Image (tube, rainbow, N blue to C red; front, side):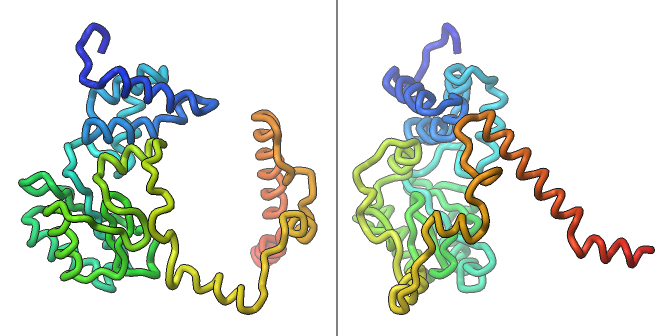
Length: 270
């Protein structure tokens, strides 16, 4: 990009540098930096890749490898809203496959395609980690629980019409680009809007409260497991962490070698 005119503004480049500066190892900031690129450009562009590489002191190939490995990073322009339908096992059985097929027909798009009006990009996605609310959809990474084909169609129609839409467990829907900016680490002030957990997710907590169950304190847990020091103690430095990891690995390998199962198996072989 040296000598070429850049489409990314100086303020965006400044924010990219700000993200990199948050981390002891600057390259650790690559993931949020790519989210910021998407929030501005609508997808990960070649220019964005090159600027991230320049700021982090790594190659464009390394940045591109990350951008093409994770499915949350898009190399084609996205619509105003990203609608993801979970089609993993439980959601699929509970109706996710039907929802996805219905939306493809209703929106006249295929997987990972955008409607002609640019309002919605539809994608089937893997587990949303919300199986207790299956089938689940996400709009700009906000949850929409217990969906049906009809409710899904109603939802995308509201999005395309510009109506206000509230997530089941989360904030009022803004846009995919605005959500990407939040993922880059820049708050939008909506973090406490809407419930974060509800229904089945809280069942265990409610049972514990009714029966007076509490989790052991950190100190009690260490005593009960015999991990009050030694290899399980928290390391204060990078070198200490590496030595601790090596020690823990060696202990684990020793335990495996001395396990009764291995001894019995060796006896059987004889």
